[in-house]
Image (cartoon, rainbow, N blue to C red; front, top):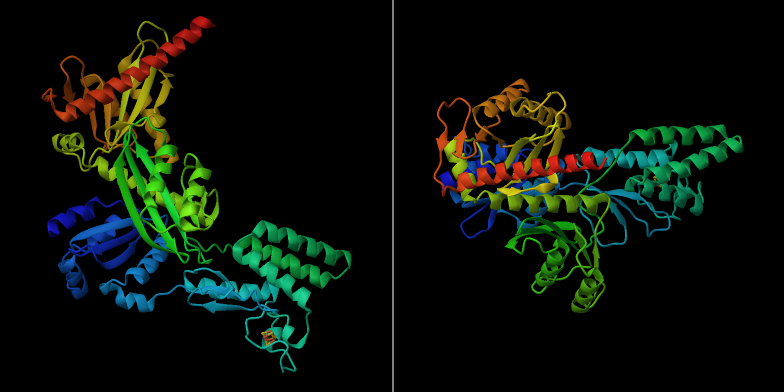
Length: 537
Ligand code: SF4
């Protein structure tokens, strides 16, 4: 079991996220967060004297994970999941950790701002969670400094004769002793809310108007105060992310597909917190529209699940209003299906979508052709991303080239690229290939795109040598490279004199041929387009 777990740990992505150790009954016994899942989880398998680690491993039967956008989001999610599942090895963590919120008691006549360790359904507005906790203290101080909103729980009107020190420090406008009227105080509260919501442009507009009004009435002290706040606002960015503070119930559906393979990743958010994630992999006809599949999936999903008020989706499902109606009838209240375009919900959708893509990638890892290629070429990882090149120049003065991308053994046409050869005069396959590979990967490096797990070029040893030369020049010698010669179907690899002759039935050879033929087809198509355009001209 340990070997299996270790292997799984090694296959985790080098991305931020939360990892879950589960026992034989599928119960979560430990939850952790990581900046790089792969590195962190692997570290559990290093020899260690830590009794806790030994105990965790002794009971672990499986490791699962959820990808997040950043380590910070991973920390929030970890905190949520720990509270929800209370894993036995996290108990200490559960007591230690709770991210603070700021609460504004908007229902009171003279609202106040205060720290809170939890969100309650008490009509107040909550902001956060703040991490590190010092951000909450800073935000509280700024609300006092900018908007003079009180942070005490003094009764108003009360018995106080004089304001407290906060007033002298210009951190409160002292409604307790009537130094400010209700309307003016409420204006300050409205500004504080905009500030905490991160609605800086809106707030800037209001404050600029106030500043200009103060200038008009020659109240230069007041104008200078607004000017200072405007300047400070420009530099402060308070953006609590990931966990909502409105206690809403939402389900978030991330959807991804690759040919017939479909993946849906669902976050269940209850009372404003991500309580659970669920994942689904299934097959559908490759040419069925995704919107239709998603609509059907959601309908089927709620046959067994409780229906929240809002359902967020990464793609608008077909017949959205029909779907909302059916779900509303079932839930006996309004149900909204929405595609978020900004803010926290957009982030959650991106996160769910990314996890759905990861499910597809994992499925791809089961492909026998990828396993066989990895073994034959002794690759460090499965060739989940293969990029194939071909050059076309038959019977014309102009040479073109193609790039095709295969993800998990399937063509991903969105990533195909065409090239007009610029530096090579006349038909010269080898030099053209050298140019196009150099152009492709210098751009990928410049723009930070993904590098392939394997490059395949159409041709024999000369083409292989040209491609290798370009990769070496770019410092990408480590990218595995093969060429596949036509007719004899021999696979050439750098540093090996002899080519590899694979069995005609070999799944690896079939995939190589598919990549090569697809690159050839795409290059020829581009070539024909160019030719017919020229003839037309
Ligand atoms: S000045 Fe009055 S309202 Fe402001 S913090 Fe002090 S006691 Fe509270």
